[in-house]
Image (cartoon, rainbow, N blue to C red; front, side):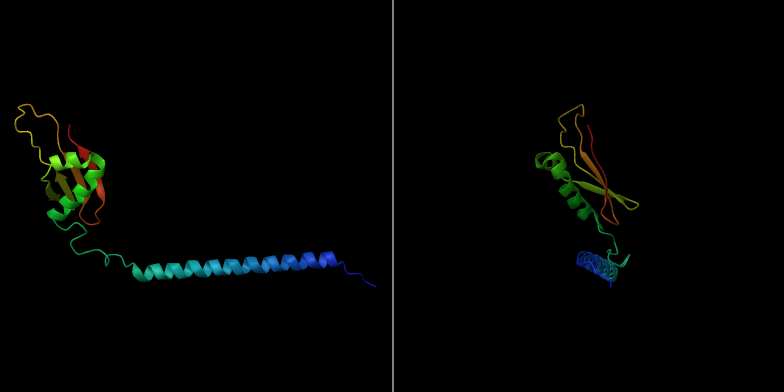
Length: 131
């Protein structure tokens, strides 16, 4: 006659249940990741989400973006003193400069903010200020 240990049976059942739960969670995780990946690919199509002229298509847009970037860096007082801004396109890079407004100084002291912005994707390439 064989005697079955009830404690061993319970621990075996718990182990099987835990294994089953782990498999279910893993399967659910795989489904969620696959679903999100398929969903993201359906919306993103390289080259189609970008405007034809790039995100910064003209000088006015470049100047407005430059001002929005420069105010937190140098403060609105400094940025206002350097208006108007002038944008120049070279290749796919906009270079936006402030205006130096101290004509009464014979020796030029100080400078203006200069920011470079990628025309295609709007990436900020550099932010500097002359001295």
